[in-house]
Length: 373
Image (cartoon, rainbow, N blue to C red; front, side):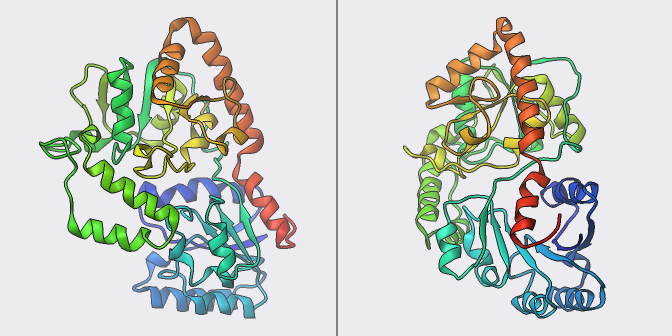
């Protein structure tokens, strides 16, 4: 197929991951992908005009894909695609947290891919015709196991913000060694909070979050959790703990090596600050599939969705409470478990490679659009 992928890209990991993952795997599967990046134009008006012109003049386009919102890809552009008879797919990576950002364009697409099923009702209420739920995935080519020296600790690659700090503190206070890889830990004066142990309030930040979250039930829980966590002394990251080890951010290659090396890799599956709520809101991200694809063993909280993708005690380590998280971390970090850990890491990679690739997600979506993949 010839796929026109309208995808905003800036030179940062937050944007570039799609080039090495979804775009790369589509091309490996034999598809031609035209990556249209609106950031290369002087304005979004100019980008949309150029996209419409390219769609009209390029012969044989089989599908328009985009993961952008209505500030980036205009309704008029999507309508132009419909006039040309080209099927269209909108991907909503953040539909659990930010469903409204694509409200204006979602009903214009022939298919909408949601990575969380909880807000499906909103998209259907807005008139979306073909709403498909499928989680994130991972490239078996870009991510893979690396033979390396084992690291006997819990590793976390990413910025320790929000209630992530709470979870890291719980592990270190329980005597579990944790290695965190984030440049922010080395910023001058970094403590992750004010001197009082409470997160500082920014009126502007609170107003932005209120406008973003107060329109739907899950958003209201996210907003409440943000306020609660900002008032909690437990939200201050204890970087002085003897069990806390800070490291600089790492490259993609080093990330794969570390996922392979660490006995356990921490995966945060609570949405934003909702870890502090009695009933956190689960949200799976890329790490859920990147860790096992690298031959790593993830430690994460139990929820019904993740149990569909990996088997607890065989391919993943799940816990139901803070105490169980600490107990299981200690259990698997024991050298007596090394053989078991190696077996689980291999099983996790096999499961990820068999079921959780980008093409495993995309091929059923293509079929729903009547496309020969």
